[in-house]
Image 1 (cartoon, rainbow, N blue to C red):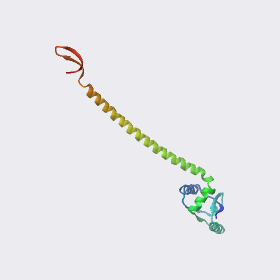
Image 2: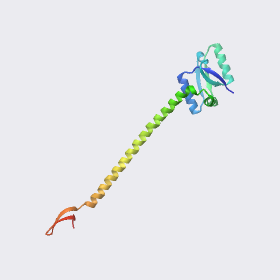
Image 3: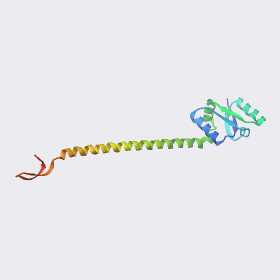
Image 4: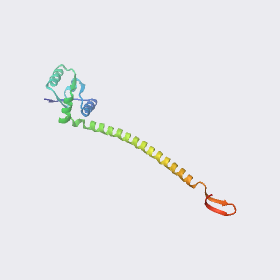
Length: 151
């Protein structure tokens, strides 16, 4: 059973939480006394809520650990929309990396195809040269000028 509680998270903490959501892993982050109440909703256990209330009374910070099931619950049931720009940014970055790798792979394939085409062209030229060797105009003694292979 989780209870919604609002805290302040830095951009770095939001990115770390987005990464934890995409990797389906737990996360731990430090909240200062000012960050124990804010505008970002987390789903916390009753024990975590009690810890936060205790730290608020003493005006001190807290190391908050969200377990893997909590992060999964948060991913499925809210708290996700403020992280959407970060997640889209991460997906875009991954697509860019994949696109770059794809471009490299295409260049390597194109280079290999060009080399194979050049080898085939050279083989074809050698074959034609073998077939045409000795043909052309030649003079047969006492008989005149001939076109074709020399006998």
